[in-house]
Length: 433
Image (cartoon, rainbow, N blue to C red; front, side, top):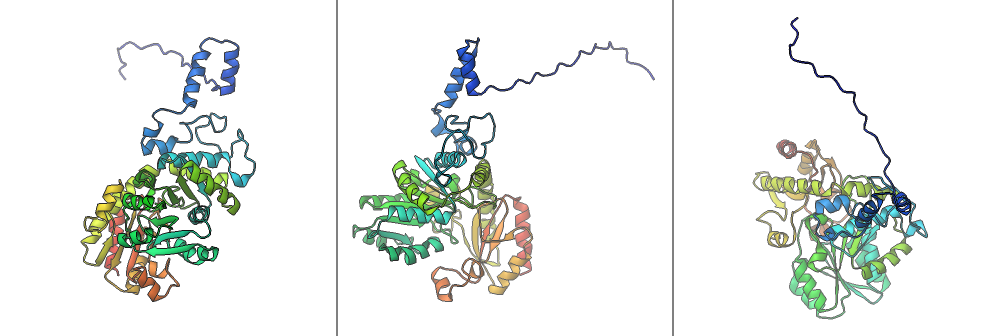
C-alpha cells in the first residue's frame, strides 16, 4: 500500500476544558468584600440582571412564555443556578402552603406577563377560578349579567348557587347588544361575565364594545378566554377588568394537570386572593412546575393548532358530508370580523355538524384513529367528542336545543400532530360513516 508523501502534523495533546463551578450571588458578595479583581464588574452585571428589564413588557409572547417569572426576574425566586425553576424553593417564607409557594409565584408572574396584567392568581381548576372571582367581586344584593352561551357549569353556578346568596342574575344572548344595553341601563349590574370564544360554537363577543358599555355604568367585565389562550387573545388589553382561564387547556397543554388562573389589577386580584385562600383552591408546587414546563412551548403549540384548525375548517366547509362548520377564522363565520379585530389566531377547536344522525356520528368518531375521545381541549394530543352524548349528556332534548346542541354536532380539538395525518384520518372516517 502506497503511503502519503504529505508531511504529517505533530499531534498536540488535547487540553481538557477546566470546569469551574458557577458562583452564587452570595459568593459574588464575598469576593467583592475581599476586593478580588474583576469581581466588581461581575457583581454589577448580576445586579443588572436582577433589576426589572426595560424591555420586559415589550418582549414577544414566545420569549415571555419561556423566561417571564424566571430568568427575567432573578430577584424573588430561589437562590439557585438551575436553568429550570426548582419545585418548592426555600428562599422565601410562605406562612401556609394554602396561601402560596415559590413555584406557584413564578407561574403567576409568567401568566401576568403573557396577559399584560398587574397580577395573577393560580387556582386548582378553571371552575375554581370562576367561582372565586364571582364570590369575591359580587356581594349579596349584587347583580351578575352573563350570556346564554357561557360555560355550562358556570351558568349553572350563577343560576342555582348565587341566587341562594341574594345575588341576582340575568342571561342575554351573546350577540344581543341591545338587550345588554337595556339591562345595564338599570344601573345595578355589578359584573358582566362571558366566554369568548364560546364552547362549542366558537362565538365571539366584541370585548371592546362590551367594556365600553359596562364601564359607563360602573360594571366590571370578566372574560373567560380559555378557548383563545393568552397567545391568541388578551382581554385586559381590550379593556376587560378580569380574564380567567382553565389552565388545564392550552396553558398547561399536555392533558396531565388541572388548574385555573385569574389575571387583572393588583387591587382586584388581592380581593379575589383573599376569597381563594378561604375556598382552599390551591395547587401543589408539583402541579405548578408542570404548568411552567408546559407554558414554555405554548406559543409553538398554539401557532401549530391555529394553522391546522384553519386549514381543516376550510376543508370541512367544502366537504359534501359536512353540513356546517363553526370556526371564527372562516370568512363565512358571522363572528369572523370580531375575531379578526381582537384575536391574532383563532384557536385549535373546530366544531362541525355531520350530514348524519346520532348513530352515524358515533360511527364517524369510532372510525377515527388519531384523536382520543375525550372532553378536554388545547393539549398536544387531538381530542374529539360528540357533545350530545358527552358534555351535554343527561340534559333534556329541550335543554340541548336551547344550547344549539344537535345530535350530529362534533367538537374536534386539534393537537400538534401533522396536518396531513389528521386530514387523512378525518376523511377516511367520513367515508366509513
